[in-house]
Length: 310
Image 1 (cartoon, helix red, strand yellow):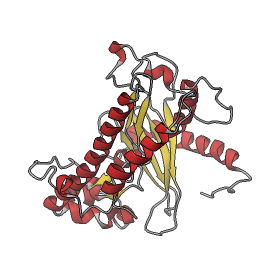
Image 2 (tube, helix red, strand yellow):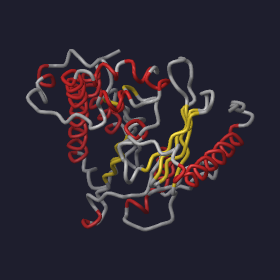
Image 3 (cartoon, one colour):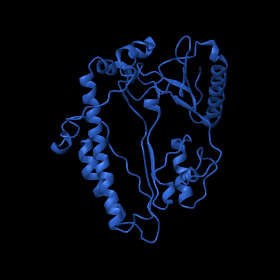
Image 4 (cartoon, rainbow, N blue to C red):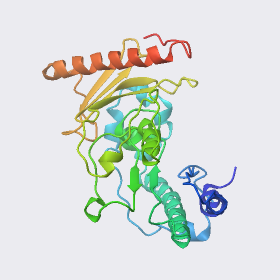
């Protein structure tokens, strides 16, 4: 496996240029690029990359503390997400170094994006090429004593989504949109930009109007699940993320473990409200929504993967 810096900075620009040079110039093109970083190996950086952020004082996440880690349920503290995470919160210098290495890999990607944009400009394609930047998952860096990507807290659940559309009016550029976009919305949006019909079986929807600054009806919540259990130390979960609330259900626990967080007042998810009677109605609502969404999902999966028992 090639080092991510070499692959992302050296190989991808070559392959991307080959694709664009060889395209049918009478038709639009679509190019998807999958960067290796930020991903291990986290060492053996080229000299110019190894020097980045060396003297920077890095901000440690507010929830990357031993106290927060000790406040997690015992089964999460024993999970794979905690194996390395606990060692980081006990050693802030070690944690800062991990963050520093991640920033170096992100900077490598940034360099490559800059190269590609310069190449598009040289080809006269910079004024009509939309660039979408996103990722497949987030990652913990000591938050709650966790490391990895398997648990449904904000650091893991959320991913970046940056859309560059040179056709947008100046007053619509550089804006942040509040509606919750999911990865299932990407394909419908690409089809919409291309002027093609969106197949009815696609679960997502085009967010093109949101990019343009339009106000349209949009989802208020979504269902999340992680059911891969090939390793017994990876804990499966499901739940609902709404605009203001996060509900998590660890369905393989006996008894089932639930968590409820007020994301407006507690964006760091440090105070579980599931046991607070004051929020009983919200807990019931989120639990029922989870059951409803799961039933809908299982009906779509029927005949393909079978059903999961809870």
